[in-house]
Amino acid sequence: MRLTRRGRLVLTTVLTAVFLGGLALAAPTSVASGVPTESKVAVVRPGDSLWTVAVRELPRMDTYRAVRQLRELNDLSDGVVHPGQHLVLPVRG
Figure 1 (spheres, helix red, strand yellow):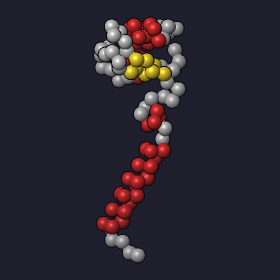
Figure 2 (figure 1 turned 180 degrees about the horizontal axis):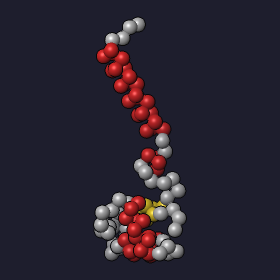
Figure 3 (figure 1 turned 135 degrees about the vertical axis):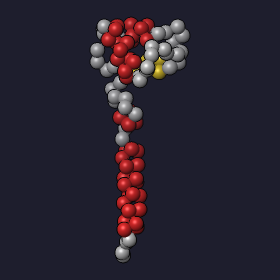
Figure 4 (figure 1 turned 90 degrees about the horizontal axis):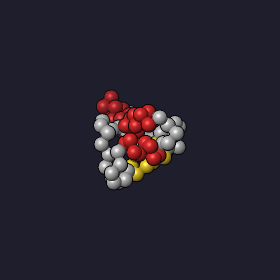
């Protein structure tokens, strides 16, 4: 079987896409989403702020550091959170 240059390019592209798609499906969800496997999640309550979540969920960690890590882990550009929102917590303090 002979393939033209264009045929080889198409075949290579298709096989690469299939391979990468298979890798994405085989990866654990938490790793694929960027959330550490051992992470915990907190649900924001009415009236909560990042500060109150940090105090309640991360009592052994310096609160300023906890708030900073919550913002980084959850990709928050500001400190605004909403009731029902799920926040990934740092694994270690």
